Amino acid sequence: METFKGSKELMLNISRIISKISSDPECSKAIIQTKKLDFMVSLIDDFQAFTSFLVRIAFVLANLTTYSEEARDQLGTVPEHTMRILKVALTYFDKDENPSEVPEPGAKGSKDMGSTEDTLVKLIRLVANICTDEQYIHAILGEK
Image (cartoon, rainbow, N blue to C red; front, side, top):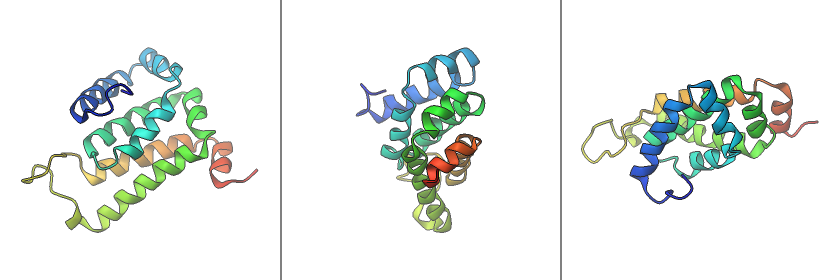
């Protein structure tokens, strides 16, 4: 994905594949071992306006952090990761409050088919997975 970051269509297709394989335990383990979860968090921030891509990347990270302590550790020990995710989620909360700013899926001129609600669900699930361990909550809040 790092190589093809400039191509939205290719990024979307790669994210589709990764979202499918992230449900498989062995594939999930291989993804986690790449140590690229921080890169995926940066994609959430960089591509926050590309909703269909954002939903898939959040889905992948949520899958990985559901059962893997190593995945939660990669994300939870760096408070900036969770703060970036929360910042994007807050942007979508704002969009949910002002639906006139969000084009209807399939509306003329709408190139992005993801829904605000689905995006929020995926981002909140991801943050909840990261925060299942109290030490990460304290790190995010800047406590010792």
